[in-house]
Image (cartoon, rainbow, N blue to C red; front, side, top):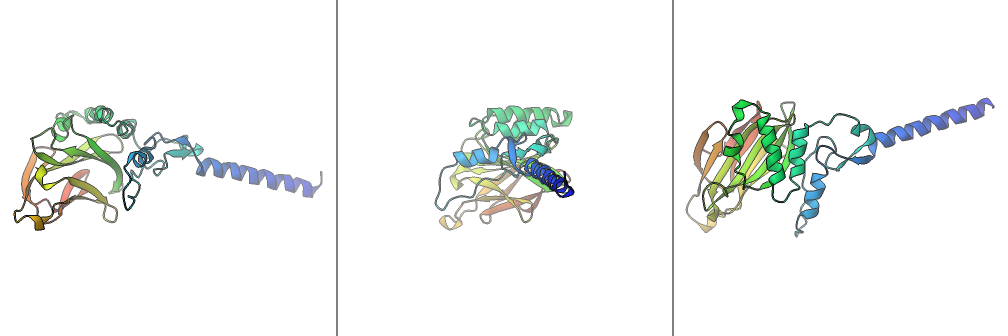
Length: 250
């Protein structure tokens, strides 16, 4: 075989190996073990709206919400624990029972200090709203959002924000509750500041009264506040806990 022919085969072989390497590294072919396509599932079951809502975001650290990972990535260890992955998969259960069972296991593995955490933060008949991975202080966390009020007192509604580590530990929660007469509350992650915004659709122009609300946090912290606009307050993660950075006045 001539040198030119050998060089051609060599170049072809290198090109083939490079192509296979790129395909294995870039093209998603296997289901993500961390989120199991949760973002796509939530998008598929969401009701259409005008204008169209953007697809829900989980920000899965392994698949980037694509629902699948590349061949090479599937051989690597997931960036979240098995118990956290079970919490996310459980969000596909409309009744929320699977998520609650998975969350109970996370709390149990968090140690004796967290006895009563789940009972205080989230009665079993509450529903889940969604989840979002965030990074703070060079650590990865999962924010789990749930409805509030159904298991506490009649006529109450609100939102609970649970903070979990990606490694599978329960860390903190903040629950904001008020009278359902004032409408629902929501929790939104602000990407530019890595903060959690608690807001309402309450129209102050429709009433002269200032609606009160209640805030409960892990380790027995509880206080009352009053709304002075649609934004009740903001939270951020510091030292593995949720801290109030604005509003939610005591």
